[in-house]
Image (tube, rainbow, N blue to C red; front, side, top):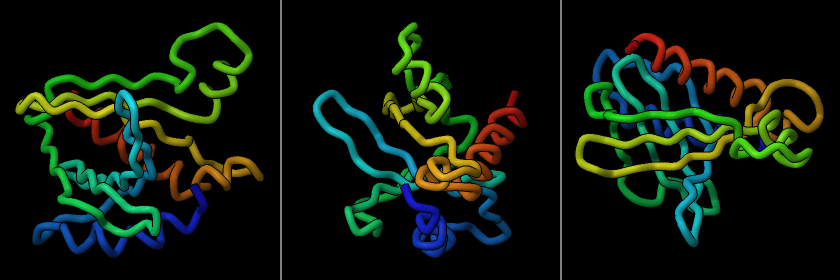
Length: 145
């Protein structure tokens, strides 16, 4: 996902904020389902995670989901290689993460996201903005124990 992703979706996520709420990070992720996938923007605030489905033009396409800490009953993060011991899986673990969430209403999400960062390939995965969004996500979970 190009580094411009954050610039394109931030205004849409900011429009969903509650009074006094700040957007600390923006992440591009692909929601994986059994036979399909869909692009999502994940907004990280101090109060909640906002999961906004997007279309191919990187515009909101569907209702956003808001998850407060008390609504997340299970979460797991792993490398995108899925624990396999192959060279391809090792490379996937270095480049991407998988976040699995389950909420109190029984909904679940499997979200795959590039790690971002610096370097030529990392910039294609969202660059510094993606990396900062993942750090904000990690801090959000750490603050909730």
